[in-house]
Length: 267
Image (tube, rainbow, N blue to C red; front, side, top):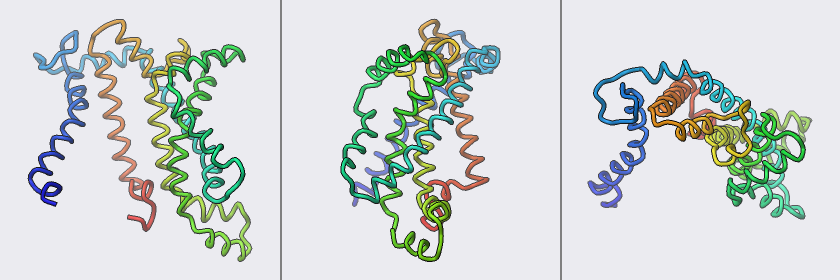
């Protein structure tokens, strides 16, 4: 207990938090440099590289590609995960373990291998380098993240609640809409958020299937780093961090993070 809650534990957790936050703080600090290269400390503060983002349409287009890609892919992943999680959590059927292993298999395959496989497959069917191909590939690799969290919520459901609603005349759709979905909503929302982040941040596989007309933000940043060493990528990273913090703040004030991720009455 002394090591956990005493001075040693406090020092350890403080150093751990500093270790986690230090790269983020450094990126945000370098983004305000007035130099033409990545440097810290800097001679002065400037918004030069944030203005450079606005004057670089390639990064803006790539951001919206990643944004729409993450929104669509995460939504599709959750739509696939909810019925799969309910079936796996409720029923014992032949091939149940095989279905679970199949849905979780993208976690076991390196993304380089997946990228090459998708590139060959999409080239064969004629969708290589398209936004549809990106959505399909991203949906496949983020389904496991959504499935695990939805499954965790679905496993704790009490079947007696649904049987009671059924005995009172509720249809299966009403039971799902009024009872099942609200109960598993924290898992659905958490799974969607993790899936969106995984899609938005995906680089390794996207390099193989992206094209000039459908380039994600991580791929664009990677290509920019290969070409130059200016701090533009740090400004882009800092802008994403600030937008994320603003979105979290607005979501917390309007809806409440506890209601979304924990659920009513579970705090």
